[in-house]
Length: 139
Image: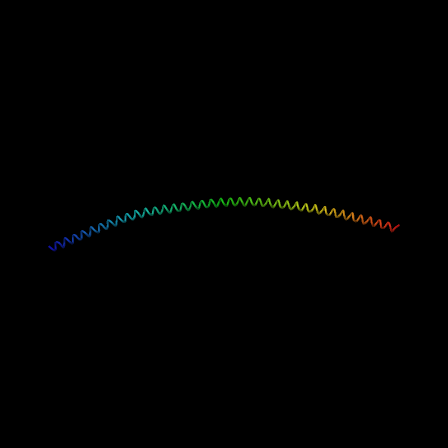
């Protein structure tokens, strides 16, 4: 009987081992499926998050580029206006300078004319004195 019980025990052990192996196989396949499903869903979520992040970055870059273009336009307008103002200021300064030069020329001409007249008067006066003194000695 011991042979029969050993054989039955051996068959029972083999059956338990097969059942245990099949359960492990089943659990492994279930875990692998669960892992793959979770892995795919998480990878899809990461991809969505990465796409959203890339979209946000692209939007921010576009906004910054637009702001930069606006600032450059404003700066160009400002520089243009300042150049116009500077040209007007230079023209006004040139006109003012020309007016001052003309005024100085006029005043110098008037001064020269008055000096010439004064000189003529002095010469005429000296001539008259000379003639007067000469007439005293001739007589």
